[in-house]
Image (cartoon, rainbow, N blue to C red; front, side, top):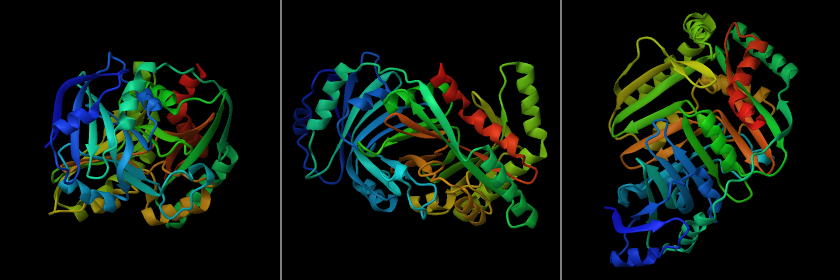
Length: 441
């Protein structure tokens, strides 16, 4: 059950949410959800999260683009195993948002210390925009029914103003190109020795901006540069900074007992010239290096589906996923779960994938821990949304960490036998070029 109220709210006007809750005459048992329509005057934006005074804050938009959600405040939070049981006695529509680090065992660096190792939460309030309608939802439980901050949030949206566009002052990469080349050479030696078949190496590009900037402005810029993606943003506290991205890659989607995933691996750039773009696509479909990289991800995902499902099927041949700056090989896989498989078990089975780690996964993870000289943090980890009936996780790539006037951009490239340091470095540039071009404009 969800309690819908007929009276509309307006942004910039302080609502009286207590009246609607009290009028429902509900004795709380479990988590109850109350909803109101909002007259937003066409102003809905991720920047609305700047006006919220409580943390954590999340923005979530599926790649399908069906709905955009702003979520604030923790009603209940913890690991997925800890919070998931609360959905059993919750109203329809109550959801968990969250994710976890790429490498659970790795020690967090200074830049990631404000981020937990893994964290999921039921928000105290959400603003959901879908189909031209905007709705406020409040989740309440016995003994936790404070509404002051939510009322302040709606009232504060009336003072909403666009922040200034930032400029880039300096940039430095870790690793630099020489260090990158040395690590690629070490990976090729591992391939030759037969201990690894694929490893995904990442780079962190640190940008110093001309002034402190709202992470939600940067996030809005990123959304515009990469529209056909999952869009996510997570700010755990006032001092932690915000992690956000525009990921093209689904980790997995569950609807009831139906399970879906995809292999997205193998990359070529895009071109504005149609003939050249078609030539690049043809290369992607024919080159042995890209095919090998992609096939290893498909093989690993098939093993995961055999472990979790009573049956599964996949595309006979990979297609091409075209994004604004790059294009990837893509193979879709789907199946039927075998019995009541716990959501945490499913997540554990999928993460990390060879698309962000390598193959075999255990050996690739050891190589990454030994050779990458920075902490990936939540980059390349799972991030998503969980409800009683369905779940969707993106792989948190094409992402960045923003804190004050500094931004860290992350990108990775899959290495297999035949990889070349310069070409893989250029692939990293292609993956972050959209953001750099917009910020430099």
